[in-house]
Length: 250
Image 1 (cartoon, helix red, strand yellow):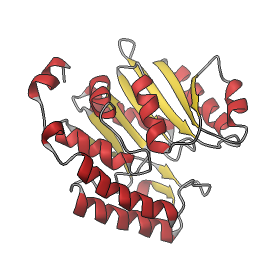
Image 2 (image 1 turned 90 degrees about the horizontal axis):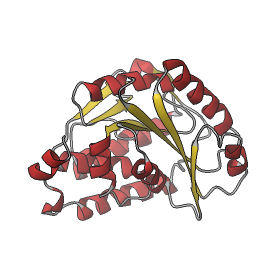
Image 3 (image 1 turned 135 degrees about the vertical axis):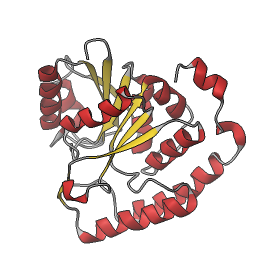
Image 4 (image 1 turned 90 degrees about the vertical axis):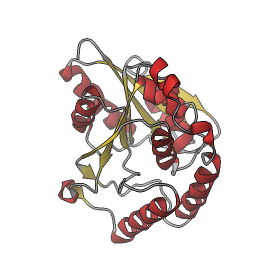
């Protein structure tokens, strides 16, 4: 890994109580692995003491901050477009997927994948701590709508642990428009439209009960966003451009 660099983007919103622990874990991991890395924290308009907590790590991480709150999709997009690494990942602030699982994604990217996503659906036994039953039901129902309205073949679009080559990241996030929680579906849809190679790997996952996803309001908004994704990317402007892909060495 001495010849390539890694970017890790972590979006945060009102995370003063757990971001410090998360950054200690992530920083320790990368130092021990001897990676050439950067950690990018995107503060999505926090109203608590998140920024004050982040200041304690200003020598170790890059902090991007704006107001007002725009949504997780906007925060991830901001960080991924800012990132400079050869391989670019994003992770949830609660580390529901442990950072060491990055090796699984990185192996696939090094082997030729353009995108690799963590999945809880491939090996459900790797879910070490489950969500409440109603949240799991919501997730499965949402995926049914994804399969019906947008694309088929990916059973877990919402795991917040995904990796991209630099070129794939630039191609996708420069086109992404969804600010809310359905942004995962949009970026995978764009990747497919561009003909990029998408791999899925099973990852460990631990539910954190302090989820920011509201079971009713956000579920409705995510469904609405699926229709927006269909409308935004239904024309030919995102259909694979072989010349563009070749020019970006994909």
